[in-house]
Length: 159
Image 1 (cartoon, rainbow, N blue to C red):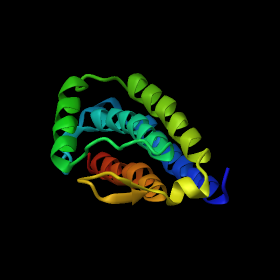
Image 2: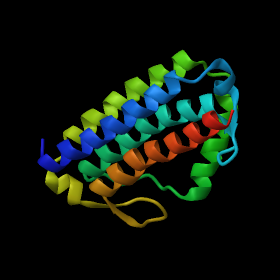
Image 3: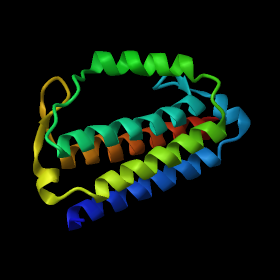
């Protein structure tokens, strides 16, 4: 494991643990609160992040292997998020936490296994823009967790 990959994995693990603790601290009423900025209940938001870990780990693995990246753009992502919110509106805390922890562990393992060359290698990702493996880890994994954590905490605190 490269030193950079280890540092990125540590940052991801810290963000993950903070998010999981926030989810575990939600009351039943807070679980159902709709987040104004994201338009979905906090429970769905937690499940969304768990699912996102698995997808991001898959993207990282494909990029590290030099495979073509999936065609992604914000329209597709927003459509997928809306569909997910409908499908998982009734998810339970146990389901979301299981998914968060399972896919979070997979994402951490993937990040820890990256070499410096894989962190530096560009892959065409969102709308064909080049992203390095490190940018994917920082923005799609760590940034994703931190953004949703802030959103979740603000909504829960306002209740």
